[in-house]
Amino acid sequence: MKTEFLKSLGLTEEQIKSVMAENGKDVEAEKEKVKNATTELEGTKTQLSEANKTITDLKKSNGDNETLQTKVKEYEKAIADQKAENIRIQRESAIKVALKGAGCTDEDYFMFKHKDKIEFDENNTPKNLDSIISTEKEGKSLLFSSTVVGTPPIEGKSDPTPQAPTDLRSALAQVYENK
Image (cartoon, rainbow, N blue to C red; front, top):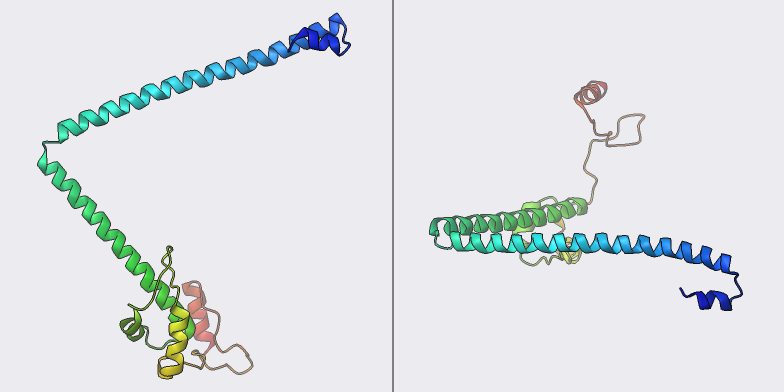
């Protein structure tokens, strides 16, 4: 900030000195921040170059080691196989949950017949499963139950399916109360 600008605003010499002193404090604080950032940047650059040098040295020293390279490839294949298995399990579970919700009586048969027709999105969620289920309900209604499966209502109670117990004590209490 220039003193001529402050004079043109009609400030006195004393006011101009105060403004310039405050401005100087702010400028010095910002200079210190820039200096710290520059120092940190230089340190990071040094670390990066050391890391790159280490990687290059490791590549050179391990380049001739066939056993190590073979092991790495085996582990990479095992990881890829495990990821594929996890995706398969995730997809099958999503299908079975949807089938159970739709009242399917034989999820395994449905999976055998239609697993290849079901498409999945990037989150492994079935995209066209609802349409396949509705088509199957129309064509093979025996695969889907239209009645609610559960225990018959107990006299005096309107809920045919009692609340599922959460621990052993409540499960035993529920069994003995219903007798």
